[in-house]
Figure 1 (tube, rainbow, N blue to C red):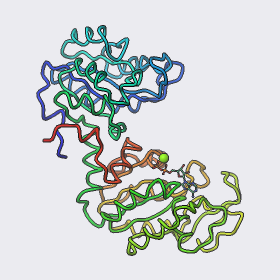
Figure 2: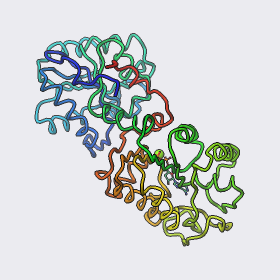
Figure 3: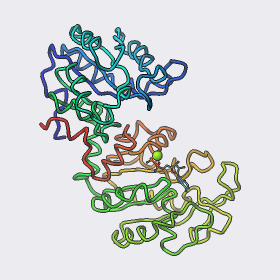
Figure 4: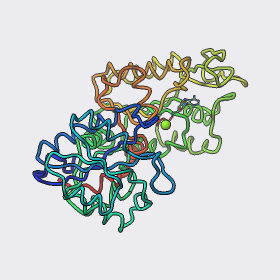
Length: 390
Ligand code: ADP
Ligand code: MG
């Protein structure tokens, strides 16, 4: 970790402008899942304990034309106050005279929440005049919203460039673990890649080929690789337009890429479809691969057995359908038993690990879907780059 965190800076008496991810599910003005709010508490509480006040900002949904009550963060302020056990001052706006007056009046220990930053088009455009108005609110910037760090917005990059800028604990953990995945990982280093499409993950595969010892391929993506090797995939999801890319990746991989040997096929894309296990060379027309098969699970477990670092992105099958979730859950359970640093990236993969009940048995489940993918591609995230170096 080469970036400063809240531990590396004097916060006493400061007004801390903190970017958090409060983009949570809300129904009828009530927060339905407060996981993300709860996740932000350690950094908020730490900053308050140092004698600072906190001004929180977040985006929430995608409002199109300016302020819209449907996209107000008010319900979040209510839930946050309950979790913190202290009042949260809800700002009537994101910026402006009234908000500035409220920010100036904050005392150490006070918490204020700005309205949805996306009420202003200047947020996503990182417009200097909007950044000016945000920046006057605080003395120190803290970013704890990893899921937005791949976007160069006013609240993730613009304000960070105007004042001392440090990482919160969530971003610190993300950079520490994802940094192991892209930096000097302890070997053997095994990467598991799945999900629907090769085309979504070409840059991840290329970057991981340069870092890992072995890459285990599953999910719909495997079909394209198998077809590129000349196998018939029946009615399986195949991306014919990237067959050449798949071939080139395999040539470059020099045996590092491991493909499934068997699969669960179904006669329809339906949880209740008829299913059977077949060799990957025996997928007939009318049938589609919806999961990896039991031999592949055993093969992949054996490849994982002595790993010291494992990164997993992308489910092994259509795990949203319970009848085709076996392969994905078996891999999740295998990871939970390893004596290795185990890192899960990607929104669906995180959901799968949670559903498998092993989220607390792996080293790190990334909270940033798109951000974790860009990190695994080897990209520098603008929201991280904008933070002060140690
Ligand atoms: P993540 O969000 O973890 O990066 P992706 O979004 O790349 O993962 O992939 C997840 C999706 O891939 C899931 O919706 C899953 O149903 C789909 N998928 C996995 N295996 C297959 C398959 N064999 N055929 C079609 N879709 C698949
Ligand atoms: Mg996904």
